[in-house]
Length: 203
Image (cartoon, rainbow, N blue to C red; front, side):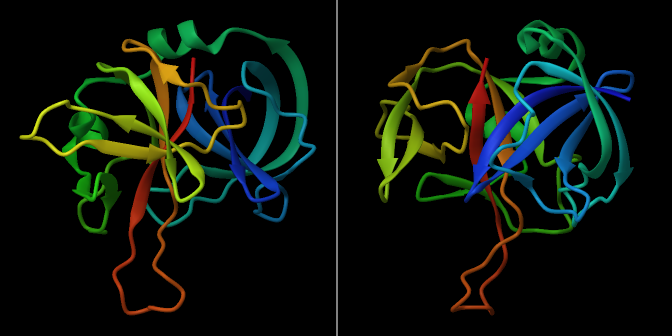
């Protein structure tokens, strides 16, 4: 199957590679043969099209996109922006509206916490209606979605992309969003597990 690479996000010393299967527009997460993330020297780059043979290995919903790559051949490189706009569902407007309004918010962070009320996928595309301003979250980059109003709490998203962050992502930019996998603090295993919203990249 031909797969367009649309995201390359950092996971420690590894990369999480997001793709779209061109014949079906199905979202994929390209894992290695052992089901792990791709190594730091992975050849996959955003905008490339690869012919890939894979084995579906879906994770815990909504992280159903995982596939193990069995073989791959690079066949082309394109600008992914137009393909995404023409073929994928695009969330528009307020950040509250993404993931079918299913995210909850606390201290400006979006997350899922109800396994019985989940979106179809853990990834998606959003056209921001506001400038996203680069900020700092405990020493790591994040993007702030500001209302400039006392009536609404500003929101923020950790940035996990490969491309170095820029100071301002303009309104109207096409953004790729993703949900981190289910997590709770290792020192508090009784706390509810959550999937937190993060920004994977822009086009």
